[in-house]
Image (spheres, rainbow, N blue to C red):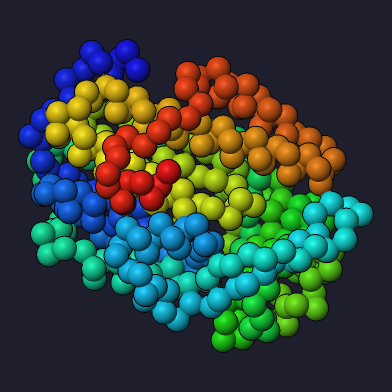
Length: 352
């Protein structure tokens, strides 16, 4: 972080924050900055509709605590899950484990969050003069992902049970998640983008032994990059990257929404600390290293899970890319884990 120390940056008294992106991370950062007395502007128009989100217990705890929602009204209309059936590996038997989660309409959730923002948070098409820019939506160019795998996703008619199901095939994994009202989300991971996504997903549902839990395969399938990714530009003078603009986790972890929230909480704490006179380079360095350590842990988990289940040439290539990235990240991590930036504040403590 020596280059950060050499560049002028906002110091005590800087109090204008522009947040680009109005998903979970952007709205949460805007909320916390406004609570801290900053002048906050949400920049730009809303992006594409937010898809369904599966929020685990840990993510729900952070969300409801930060947004002062002890009765969990933000989750109204969501579908409660109580367990997960997992068959991981060629000869493995299904194992059912307790797994409390709620499937929510992502767009409905972010709309509800925006309605709870303080009136002092303004919207603008163009960013005003600002001391801090927080980017939550646009991934910076030139940051390659750790692998080439893709996720296929679509909605399908499905019984409204309280158990999600996940199983591996020779080509990847498949997950079916009931969302209530006779519908659900189907996802499949594969290291090679298929020529016929809908046909491929239908085949994978059957190969995974999950055809009995899906009334019909998804009629429309979206293919999206899914390999983990971490921005090199995480913390700069006057600029922080959060949420989808700084980090993408492999969906196998089921914790992407939680990590997006935590980046927003930590970024808001860093901005507040610098305004209050704490050493800017130290706090920016902490943010940079904290995300690096979390990403290293995530890659380690991905390597363990995928090595245990797949041995095809395509997956061997993915594991090689992951191993190479882990070596590089290990060399960059000077501190594996640190404590919270500040103490005595519950929304900051919630992310530790």
